[in-house]
Image (tube, rainbow, N blue to C red; front, side):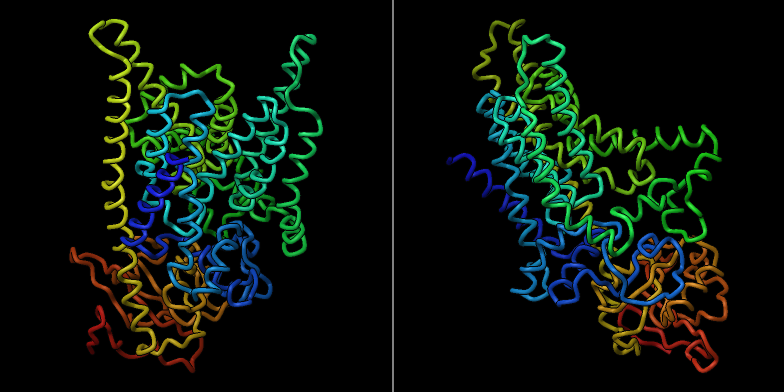
Length: 554
C-alpha cells in the first residue's frame, strides 16, 4: 500500500499548494456552490437571495418577483452538501469550502494506480498514471475549485472501474456502481450519461451471451441490474421528489427547454428569446448542424488541452488502439463516446464556456493509463527494429520522461488562469471594501451579470442582467427593486456595454459612484451606478462622488 499512499499525499500536497495560490472561488459555478453551502450552513436550506440566471425562475420575470428563491433548479447540490458541514465547524471561510475538494479529489491518484494494476499495466505505467492524476496537466488548477471537478474526477473513474469488475464476474461491484452514478448525478446534470453507460454495459453483457448461443454466460445477473438501479434511486430519489415538489419537474431547465433549445449562448441569459423546439427547428438545418459540429470540435479541443495538455494526444490514440478489445477499457470507451455525443447533440452551445470540461475530468484516470500504454507500445515497436534498445530500461525511461513533461505543463496553465482570475477578483474585492462607505445597505439589491459572485464578495443580494434590450433590463430592475447597477468590462451584456464605455444613460441609471480604471487606459474594468426607480430617489441627480480604487474624488 505504500505506492497508493504516496500518490494520495502527492495529490494532496499539489492541491493544497494550488489552493494557497488562489483560495477563492473563481467563476460563477464555484461562487454558486459556495453561496448555496453557506445558506445551508446558516440554516436557510436551499434558498438563495440572488438570481444567477432567469432559467431558475421560469426563464421570465415571475408574476411575483421576490427574493429569496429556491436554489438548484439547474446546478445540482452535491458540492454544496459536502461543504456545508465544514462551514458549520469552521465558519464561512475559503478553507472550509476547500477541505472536501482537497480530500476527495486526491483519491483519484491512488485510484488510478489500482485501475492500472487491475488492467495488467506495467508498474511504471501505474505509477506514472497515478502521478498524472495527482497533477492532471492543464486541469490541475481546477481541482481546488469548490465545485464538481474534484468530485467527478474520482467518481467517474471509480464507477467505470466497478463496472469492469462486474464484467469480470463480481456483480456486487456492478451494484455498487449504481450508488456512485447516483452521486455523480447529484453533482452534475450530465451524470445521467454515466448511468446510461453503466446500463448499456449490462445490455451488452446480456446481448453477447444471447448471441453466442449459450457458449458464453452473462457475467451480470438480473439482480445486479436491479440492485444497481436501486442504489441509484437511494441517492437520487429524494432529490427527484424535492425538485418535483419545488419546481414541478425533476429537471426544470431541461424540461422547459431553456438549456436544450437555445440557438445561441446569449439566449441562455435572455428572457425574451423563447427557447422552444419549434423555434429551434425554424432556424433550419444549416445553423443546427454548424452548432453541433462546433460543440464537437470544442469538446475535442477541451479534452486535448485540459486532459492531455496536447502532449498526450498521440500516445492516447496509440494506447486506445492497442487496448481497443480490452474488457478493462471497454466501458471507458463507451462512456467517452457518450460524453462526446452529449457535447455534440445535447449542449453544444455550452461547451465553449467550459461545460464539457466537467465531464472530461472523469475520463482522466483511464486516459492517463491508456496514454502511457501508448508510450510502452511505441517503445516496444522501436525496440523490435533497434536490437540495441533494452525495453526493460527504455520503457520506464520514456514513461517517466512523458510524465515529467506533462507535469511541467501544469504550472504554465495554472499561473495563466490564476492571473486571469485575479484580474477579475481584484476589482470586486475593491468594490466590496467600499460598499458601506458608498451607502450600499446590506439588503440593497444589485443588478449585475454575476450575482452569485457578488453575493460571495459583498454579501448583497442580486439579480442577473439579462442579455436583452435596455427596456427589458429596466423591467427587471423595477420588478426586483434593485438599487445598484454594477458593470464589468470582461463580462457584460451588449445593451449595457455602451454605458460602461461612457455613452448615454437612461434616466433610471445615475452617474457612476465607484470606478476601477483599466490599466491599459481603455474602458473601466468595473463601475457601479445608482438605480433610481421613483422621483423620491435623488441619487441619480447631480454629479457623482467617485471612488477610484478606494480614492474618493468629487
